[in-house]
Image (cartoon, rainbow, N blue to C red; front, side, top):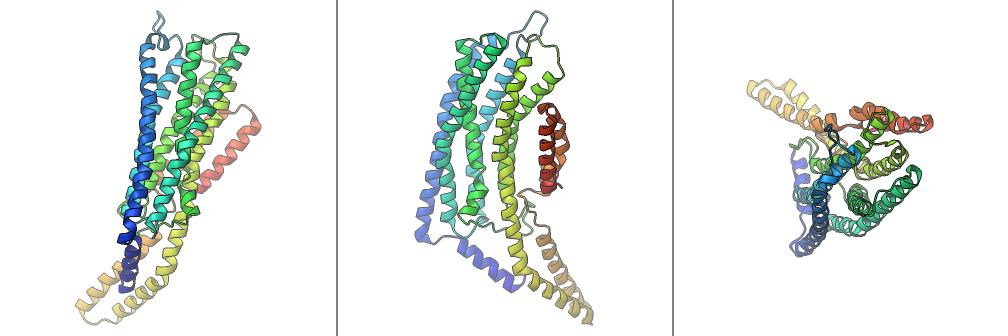
Length: 388
């Protein structure tokens, strides 16, 4: 690296470390934000434990088997199992967010003002505190109203215990979905609080140091996809008119509504943050190119001229090594991604790779041709945006 480049890097690193007088305030903000997250997660554990005990105590009813070995109610059994597995796995989200913010602050990837980045973290944790109640209440209402509608149309009763248990379970799921939706605002809050990304060309994570963000967003995407995958699987089975022990045909319309709600949370917790960080990383890459490109171009041209004019073999070899190093730095800047994922991550999780798969499922989810056309257009846009 040239002396000018080294000086700029050192200056940026010195600025990213807060003065000693501010360090205490930054630590207090971090501690408060992490305490809010841990307290909320502990509360959710206290709620999940009795719900899980209820599931285990009623396992003979929820997972009843007929004499021929088939489940009496496969939709109920699979739904309860999926919900509880997803809920327990979602408890890793708070820890993942804390780890992500610590990594970004420790590597000085997020801007020059540590206090500003900490305030973003604290703001999101406080926002999640009340959003969890709103989302939980909303899903609870959707569950209860949906069951009552199905009861009226199908002329059947689910029973008070099942309705209350499902409503509480729905509230827990809604709370977790709401929290992940709030964490999905990380990129927009970085933009609002003017927290820039300081990407590092050639960083070992192949994402300029932003890989912790990508891993966290992917964690949220996988957890949020659990709901959509289960609903989609049942919509596919219902559309194929599979012979089930019970008649599930009246659930199709209700499941489409739940699918749209789940898709909304998936967009909020996965698609939206990816879009936001794509813009932030593109800006960060443009800043690096603007500051380094001209200097590096002049350095490469000068080394080319000196190498051609060199008569001493040792001098020629030395200039050749310096030229190779300058070219390597230029390639590293050019290779900086505009999404917070490594090369392998972009290949495996790009929307372009899963677009056709989602389109096939969308044909089962949306029976109306107009809705399917809209769904396909949205996926084509995302394919163009994230396609590898």
